[in-house]
Amino acid sequence: MRARIARGVGSSAGSGIPGTGARSRHVEVAAPEGFAGRWVTYFENGNVARDRTLNDGRPVGRSLSFHDNGAMLAEVTYDERGVLDGPQRNWNREGRLIYEANYRNGLLDGREAYWSEAGELETERFHEAGVLVDF
Image (cartoon, rainbow, N blue to C red; front, top):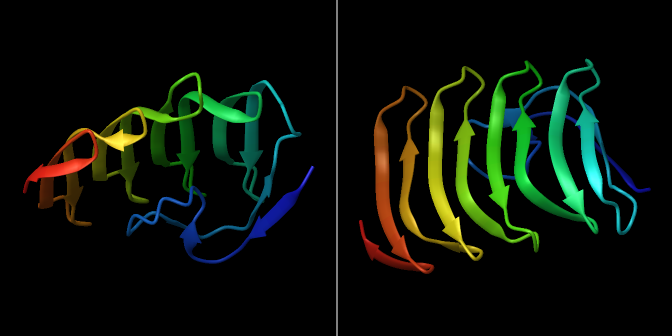
Protein backbone atom coordinates (compact mmCIF):
# COMPACT_ATOMS: atom_id res chain seq x y z
CA MET A 1 0.00 0.00 0.00
CA ARG A 2 1.08 3.54 -0.69
CA ALA A 3 0.53 6.32 1.83
CA ARG A 4 0.32 10.05 1.25
CA ILE A 5 0.45 12.43 4.20
CA ALA A 6 -1.41 15.69 3.80
CA ARG A 7 -0.96 18.68 6.09
CA GLY A 8 -2.14 22.26 6.08
CA VAL A 9 -4.86 23.96 4.12
CA GLY A 10 -5.77 22.08 0.99
CA SER A 11 -8.52 19.86 -0.25
CA SER A 12 -8.48 16.38 1.16
CA ALA A 13 -10.70 15.30 -1.68
CA GLY A 14 -8.71 17.00 -4.40
CA SER A 15 -11.78 18.89 -5.50
CA GLY A 16 -10.11 22.25 -6.15
CA ILE A 17 -13.31 23.95 -4.99
CA PRO A 18 -12.61 27.08 -2.91
CA GLY A 19 -13.45 26.87 0.78
CA THR A 20 -13.14 23.10 0.99
CA GLY A 21 -9.61 22.94 2.44
CA ALA A 22 -8.80 20.52 5.21
CA ARG A 23 -6.84 21.82 8.19
CA SER A 24 -5.85 18.66 10.05
CA ARG A 25 -3.21 16.20 9.01
CA HIS A 26 -4.43 12.93 7.57
CA VAL A 27 -2.83 9.94 5.96
CA GLU A 28 -4.32 8.94 2.63
CA VAL A 29 -3.59 5.25 2.19
CA ALA A 30 -4.11 3.90 -1.30
CA ALA A 31 -6.12 0.71 -1.51
CA PRO A 32 -4.28 -2.39 -2.69
CA GLU A 33 -4.37 -2.91 -6.44
CA GLY A 34 -7.63 -4.53 -7.51
CA PHE A 35 -9.28 -3.96 -4.10
CA ALA A 36 -13.05 -4.43 -3.88
CA GLY A 37 -15.08 -3.25 -0.88
CA ARG A 38 -15.43 -0.30 1.44
CA TRP A 39 -12.28 1.85 1.90
CA VAL A 40 -12.18 4.45 4.67
CA THR A 41 -9.34 6.85 5.54
CA TYR A 42 -9.08 9.06 8.63
CA PHE A 43 -7.71 12.36 9.84
CA GLU A 44 -5.10 12.34 12.58
CA ASN A 45 -7.86 13.45 15.00
CA GLY A 46 -9.81 10.23 14.30
CA ASN A 47 -12.53 11.75 12.11
CA VAL A 48 -13.28 10.12 8.78
CA ALA A 49 -11.56 11.85 5.84
CA ARG A 50 -12.97 9.72 2.99
CA ASP A 51 -15.46 6.86 2.79
CA ARG A 52 -16.02 5.10 -0.49
CA THR A 53 -16.61 1.76 -2.13
CA LEU A 54 -14.09 0.41 -4.60
CA ASN A 55 -14.46 -2.27 -7.25
CA ASP A 56 -11.23 -3.51 -8.79
CA GLY A 57 -9.54 -0.43 -7.28
CA ARG A 58 -11.96 2.06 -8.86
CA PRO A 59 -14.55 4.09 -6.94
CA VAL A 60 -18.16 2.99 -7.49
CA GLY A 61 -21.40 4.42 -6.15
CA ARG A 62 -21.38 7.31 -3.72
CA SER A 63 -18.00 8.56 -2.45
CA LEU A 64 -17.96 10.84 0.59
CA SER A 65 -15.21 13.18 1.80
CA PHE A 66 -15.24 15.14 5.04
CA HIS A 67 -13.57 18.16 6.61
CA ASP A 68 -11.41 17.47 9.66
CA ASN A 69 -14.21 18.88 11.86
CA GLY A 70 -16.55 16.11 10.66
CA ALA A 71 -18.59 18.32 8.31
CA MET A 72 -19.28 16.96 4.84
CA LEU A 73 -16.77 18.16 2.23
CA ALA A 74 -17.87 16.36 -0.94
CA GLU A 75 -20.30 13.82 -2.28
CA VAL A 76 -19.44 12.34 -5.66
CA THR A 77 -21.19 9.53 -7.57
CA TYR A 78 -19.47 7.01 -9.85
CA ASP A 79 -20.89 4.32 -12.13
CA GLU A 80 -19.80 0.66 -12.05
CA ARG A 81 -16.79 1.52 -14.28
CA GLY A 82 -15.49 4.17 -11.88
CA VAL A 83 -16.59 7.05 -14.13
CA LEU A 84 -18.29 10.15 -12.70
CA ASP A 85 -22.01 9.64 -13.17
CA GLY A 86 -24.56 11.51 -11.09
CA PRO A 87 -24.50 14.39 -8.64
CA GLN A 88 -21.40 16.04 -7.20
CA ARG A 89 -21.73 18.42 -4.26
CA ASN A 90 -19.19 20.30 -2.16
CA TRP A 91 -19.69 22.10 1.15
CA ASN A 92 -17.54 24.53 3.12
CA ARG A 93 -16.39 23.83 6.69
CA GLU A 94 -19.56 25.42 8.07
CA GLY A 95 -21.78 23.07 6.06
CA ARG A 96 -22.95 25.51 3.38
CA LEU A 97 -23.28 24.15 -0.15
CA ILE A 98 -20.70 25.84 -2.39
CA TYR A 99 -20.73 23.67 -5.54
CA GLU A 100 -23.22 21.41 -7.26
CA ALA A 101 -23.09 19.68 -10.63
CA ASN A 102 -24.29 16.58 -12.41
CA TYR A 103 -22.22 14.18 -14.49
CA ARG A 104 -23.25 11.61 -17.07
CA ASN A 105 -20.63 9.21 -18.44
CA GLY A 106 -17.83 11.37 -17.01
CA LEU A 107 -19.05 14.61 -18.59
CA LEU A 108 -20.83 17.58 -17.04
CA ASP A 109 -24.49 17.28 -17.93
CA GLY A 110 -27.13 19.69 -16.65
CA ARG A 111 -26.78 22.50 -14.15
CA GLU A 112 -23.45 23.44 -12.57
CA ALA A 113 -23.56 26.04 -9.80
CA TYR A 114 -21.12 27.78 -7.45
CA TRP A 115 -22.11 29.61 -4.26
CA SER A 116 -20.11 32.11 -2.21
CA GLU A 117 -18.94 31.32 1.31
CA ALA A 118 -21.95 33.40 2.44
CA GLY A 119 -24.34 31.16 0.49
CA GLU A 120 -25.11 33.47 -2.44
CA LEU A 121 -25.30 31.98 -5.94
CA GLU A 122 -22.27 33.27 -7.87
CA THR A 123 -22.17 31.24 -11.07
CA GLU A 124 -24.66 29.05 -12.86
CA ARG A 125 -23.94 27.19 -16.09
CA PHE A 126 -25.67 24.49 -18.09
CA HIS A 127 -23.99 21.64 -19.94
CA GLU A 128 -25.08 18.91 -22.33
CA ALA A 129 -22.73 15.94 -22.65
CA GLY A 130 -19.77 18.07 -21.52
CA VAL A 131 -20.54 21.03 -23.75
CA LEU A 132 -21.41 24.39 -22.19
CA VAL A 133 -24.79 25.40 -23.60
CA ASP A 134 -25.88 28.30 -21.40
CA PHE A 135 -24.60 30.52 -18.59
